[in-house]
Length: 287
Length: 336
Image 1 (tube, one colour):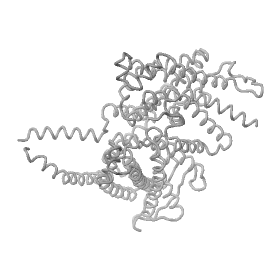
Image 2 (cartoon, one colour):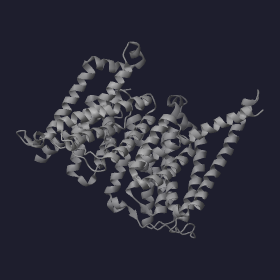
Image 3 (cartoon, chains in turn cyan, blue):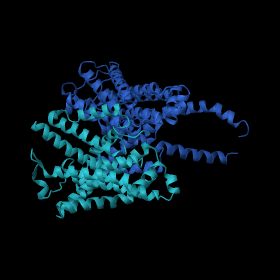
Image 4 (tube, helix red, strand yellow):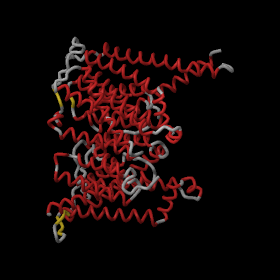
């Protein structure tokens, strides 16, 4: 019982960290129809900035995370203008290739500047100590990650379903020329939602560094995981991504606890089964 | 070039492209033999290049001719490599038989992979291909008693070719054997993609709706292509196992699959020459640059990929074609 509970809590925290990173990718794929394999690279950049600010400059955890989000968006904007904008309407294969190319570049450059070692983000004292939940205690950091995940999910749902920006975004996705004719500035909408996705990636990279350690190959190592989560959840669906993250996080963590020498075997087996049963993802929309 | 031009052009095209193809095959063979004379100290590397070229050719069948994006082709290559390696250690040492075993294992894996992948479309399909190669990777890692786990298989000793030519330390026999194999497979694939079956595959890539309106059901056609592609990739894997006499976990990895796709795109999709050109250029540059610093190599490949997508979507062979067409047009215009 004790093991089951601690597995469940770990799985939930891990799933939420995945969710914060992947939801941005799910939005770019589902709403902007862009297969952005470089999403993990942006999460990694966020992690590096947070680590540099919090550990090397000693600015503290909160400042580190804010700088990570802002810095990563600053890096991403010129990339969006120069590279991503040209492949929005290209074939899936072109998008995959170009974004893999960007990922490779980011890995090479990061290693050149920061070296191949693992980077840590020191936690503040409040998050480092365990919190008593009554029935058992949990590391404060995990609780923070779970709470952040819930806030992100709620905030995004509100933004897309309930605000003017969300209406414009959905209109631009549904029919871009018509939205433009009605005075929606689609270029601006795309750029803003791209920045939002990247910002979430950076936030997730910094917050989830305890689960997905920051190192140069981060972008490639977890690229597959992120892609898997999005396609299992169904691109563009927030509840789908949430369900996929919690389900896959649970499978992954449970397999690691109970049969550690099988590695990722059961994770990928589950992925194949789920995708075969739900080719559009758990909660994907029909196309 | 007056009224008769369209007729004579249509009549001349099959003949001309047949002639072009025989010249192309001859060029491939000559380039291979030239490698044999020019780089006698690097034959084992060149043999590995041929083995990977077979993998890239097999990927071209699926991606270039059927339009199915796959990041898991190494699953088929690795199946062939492991099957040949295990058979060789079990006492089957005849090289031709080992190649056949590899091709069969690759073909069976291709059938399985096709059955699974064809259930989905677009992104989920891509994810399935990745999941399959990762699953096989973990399985090969776990089944220590059969595959040697992370140590891999080693100590294969294939019998002499035709009972005469030993697989020697310099890899001369292995290289010439591989080259002959590559040329045979290449000719077979050239015939395949020109056959009605190859045309149906191309049709499915361009307009699946129209092909199904012609009464052709897509699934069996694509599955057959997966079978053929698997057999070709398995041949490559078996060749690698025989030539290097080692089979490692890297032969069934996501990295190898991704690299194969990069090589294919570099050379040009939907063009068998492109697959060969891409493999040779990619592996040669990697051999040189990665010796200095593997991370510079990664940056270079990344930059190259971005540049290809932006400026040369048809790859190196497409750019060569384009250049040739411009030159030819210039010549024809100057001719009386």
